Amino acid sequence: MKYKIVTNNPLVKKEKENIYFVEGSYEDVLIKVRDLVYKGVELISHPLGASMRMLYSPYRSIIVGEKNKVVDPFHIEIIENSIINYRKNLEGRKVDWIHADDYALIDNELLKSTLKDLEVK
Image (cartoon, rainbow, N blue to C red; front, side, top):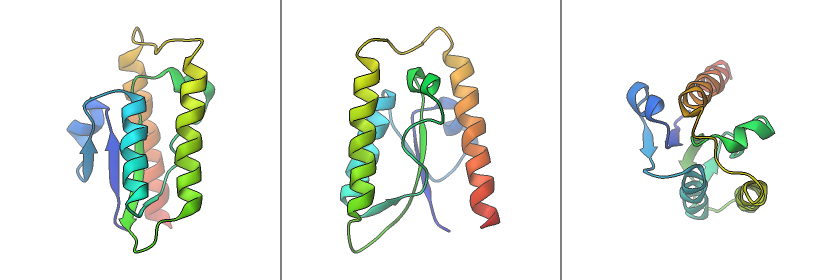
């Protein structure tokens, strides 16, 4: 399976190939993924983290697939709702930059796990 990783995580940038590196925030990563989905790129991993706590991470890595001839409306719904939910959850709380190194490590490990699962399929 061909894929790319959309990320703003500096650890992922150092360790992985096939990336779109986003100089910006978690929200900027979501917006980049949204732009790709509107061009027909498929979502492979979910845009939001595995837990509420991960929403306060400054880093996010999302796996996208190949560009299709047809835009998938389900993927549009997922990414649009993810952006809305992210913004809604950050209204009452700020990004946790104090633990940024820990979040970078967790995001990288979650990415490795997801990639390993993709190889098995």
